[in-house]
Length: 138
Length: 138
DNA sequence: CTCTAAATAGAAATCATTTCTATTTATACT
DNA sequence: AGTATAAATAGAAATGATTTCTATTTAGAG
Ligand SMILES: [Mn+2]
Ligand SMILES: [Mn+2]
Ligand SMILES: [Zn+2]
Ligand SMILES: [Zn+2]
Image (spheres, helix red, strand yellow):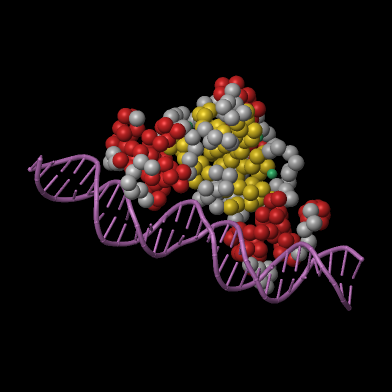
């Protein structure tokens, strides 16, 4: 938790009750949540909290690498804690409980080479979404 | 083109000028387009065309495997022609011209095994978005 | 040609997300 | 500790992509 607050400071973002609460919700929950989910949990802790504030905080936490943003099946915003912001990796999401696991294994280079050779193209980025059932849910 | 129309018939969808025009736009263009892009092109060919009609046709063509749906950087709907609806494969999108290449190479099994072993989970699906520059644009 | 279910246009609704603005607050500096 | 100030926030409002609704038109079967 301390390192998250330091990250905020390093990025000139003030340490506010709302920001601390959002981080804490992700830390103690460990799953993938949308702005409205987070909003619901925040309302239980704080006297007042606006939905635009939640959207803004989530976006800021994404910008400084604390959260990763993804898009749900129904094309809405989702966020989850990312503990490896500087390492290339992907995320496995449980379809039942939305728990996230960080996947530090990536063998995309093979695909990349295939594409660059076959189409004479330049591969610049890849994004992988992996879904299934976690050990608890399967 | 004939096979696309047969596909419509096979799925009890009538062959209408609007549907033919949408298919033709994708066939003659070969890139990734959103509903509004398609709408713009349709307006040049047809006297009247409604945007909801475009959304509906694109969704239907996706359902019967003629198009694949994806989500753009700014979280909007995009569609592109898919000539391999029955084969597992991915798509490479050119960041400059939106051209799509079908990538029939997938080595995801390695990642899948890694996850299932490390997290004792069950991997059920994976989705890969590959971006870069095509041979023309690089 | 006639009939009927499917398709369409256009208007309206939906709803996640963003913008705006007045007020409050964290924090750097006395 | 007290003050100043830019940053953060609440709440209301706007936005805009997408969907729904409904009266009208049309494709295709018989
Ligand atoms: Mn991560
Ligand atoms: Mn394809
Ligand atoms: Zn990777
Ligand atoms: Zn694959």
